[in-house]
Image 1: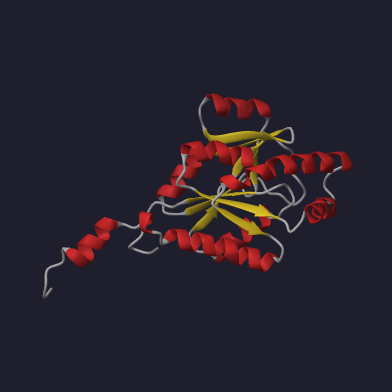
Image 2: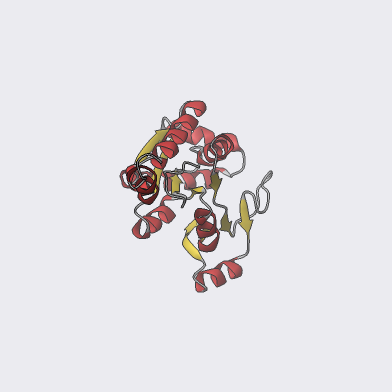
Length: 212
């Protein structure tokens, strides 16, 4: 970690319509950029093929989820396609204090909740090259019925209106280029002046005695 930067990690909030590829992008960036972790959300939806408890999501029932809401354990939570999703406040703050940058793979509803409380987060929106490509990607996943795909596309049209609320926009046309775009955003945000450790700079360069 750069000594001149603040030790507390930053929050990078990544949203996209379902099927735009944000989860795949986030996973690749974590593999390639040091000191970045994905925040693991809690959800009431069923585990899909290939997903792992504690790596992709924490899978809980609605009663457990509501109990966590009552205990104020979520930094944000939202209902998406009939399922509940939430970000653990404790998990996030612990990793952030350890100096990790955290990628939050969350929908627009949750991101807008978070933005009201945490404007200094880095808000990134992912879009496919076209609506037709979004539709074809959802169909290629082979995990949803035609009715469910229609619901997701309707929801996508509604959510995309929020794109102006984000600080960065990435078009996920070429996957490798989109990975580089997201990596560039994270690395550039790390060295912004507002994240600098001014005490370290002053002690190292300004207050140091001459001849020492």
